[in-house]
Figure 1 (tube, rainbow, N blue to C red):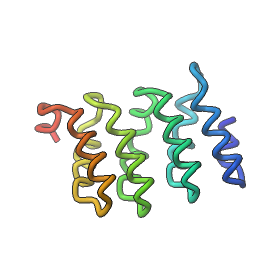
Figure 2 (spheres, one colour):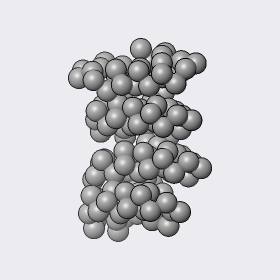
Figure 3 (cartoon, rainbow, N blue to C red):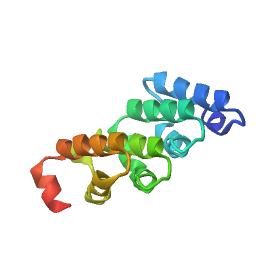
Figure 4 (cartoon, helix red, strand yellow):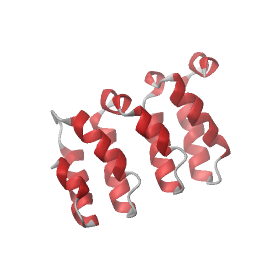
Length: 134
């Protein structure tokens, strides 16, 4: 199913991500995470949304393992991709690496109001001690 994330049609990519989001005990979650993160930058918003949902269901360890890829998406040209990355990083809370918090704080000046708001929420989840380290 992970291979379907690179399907030539947006419907195939979306369906694959949606299916992964419904799986409770996906053994290859870490292998799927980098492919799902690539789909956050997909040209079709429905694919981005499905990939974000799947990553959110995979849990913190999987997202933390792919943090470098998510941090790279914080400066993507598409606001929807930046928003998805901010929200996923924000769900890490106090598990968020300091590097991610530092990069995330730069999104407080994003051109898009939704991205700025999601960034404030994500940073609020960190708490004062984590922010001081950033």
